[in-house]
Length: 353
Image (cartoon, rainbow, N blue to C red; front, top):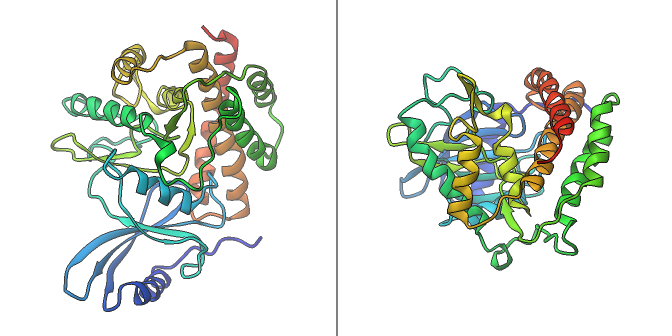
């Protein structure tokens, strides 16, 4: 495939005008601006003014040619619809599933005003985030409460046509998780990696059972929610594209990854909010679910493994092919693969509790 043609703002303005001419007669768009950050979707924020003069801000999320995570806009749209009134989530408004108007699959959601990190933090919101006090204390409760509410969501009664339920056997949810990421790694990896091969074999031999399915976010951490800095209120949970029906341990292991936490005077805080045991205890009390340390260990291995598959496999391949608007960022992020390989070595050497 040829290199991805990064969309010019003028092209997006024209596409938005065509899109809303059919759907909101008399409306006009203005203040169209590219949104930075992320390594997956091209995003533009814009104002839509209706025929009556009322104006609202929206966010256009549009697929590049390829992304570090290959996901589906309809699937993400369904999740956001299902989450309304359950956890803070942007409201989905319009979907161009086939890319008929925008050239690539796209979704338009309400714009939510907030930040992903303190304005003076100086650190990336996904790696080594620092919140500080009193903000840390304000965010701890809502962070846990929204996760518990998500895991308690009755997915069987929701309109989630693009989701499958892994209930054929107790190991199916873990097997699906491993198989999804191993296929991506096999297709996208540039060169063989002994630790990735060994970890893959270990996971297939140690698939845990899941007796109580949960709806999981897939990338729940500080950096993937917006908050009001003054009040510490979480106003929107973001980046639902990896959500699936699975095991609650998968979200917990992802939250507890060392790479997305903070080491402060020898003490680690997950997402700069909780020390690990504090988080596990708080989650068990709030959710009524049990945290099985062996299952948590398995998903810690999977978390490190799929992180490496993303940054060293898919990310670097599409950057080399120039199939994404963030090819420089993807090349830079590939350097974090050493951290994830190191985590795999430690986890597999220590073994499950």
